[in-house]
Image 1 (cartoon, rainbow, N blue to C red):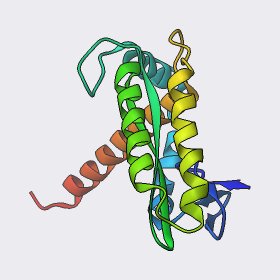
Image 2 (cartoon, rainbow, N blue to C red):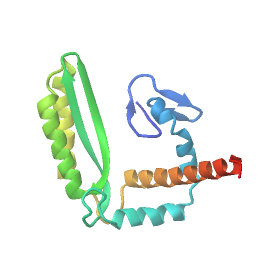
Image 3 (tube, rainbow, N blue to C red):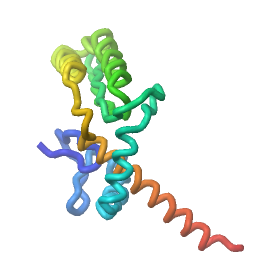
Length: 173
């Protein structure tokens, strides 16, 4: 199965191919320039920022780290329509577990109502949250997901600066 080069989601049907990259949808495809730019960021800059984020305070609660990416899984259904989400959050473990508990509650209340996918996906998403809550990430080193998030953030900052420089060069004085 194919994966989106930007967000990492599984592409079941379709997708969008651009050169060597494959994207889930137009939103991910629009971020192609970030993906290309992120591969050009020096490793020293990545590792410095990565350690600062990983050992820094939690962006959700302000508590102490380690900080990493924690994914919450949700599903909701309405008769013939079923939607599922995997939402990454950069936070401390406690905030990540709280978000995953919310995902379990949300899915248990709203996930079952679709035929047939609600019955299939609700236990899967609840199970994914439970496994994520029980599995303790390695607090000594950041995950690959956090590295990718930091890499994309640095690339976004560089791209914003390039656009601002270009706009100021074009604007009359």
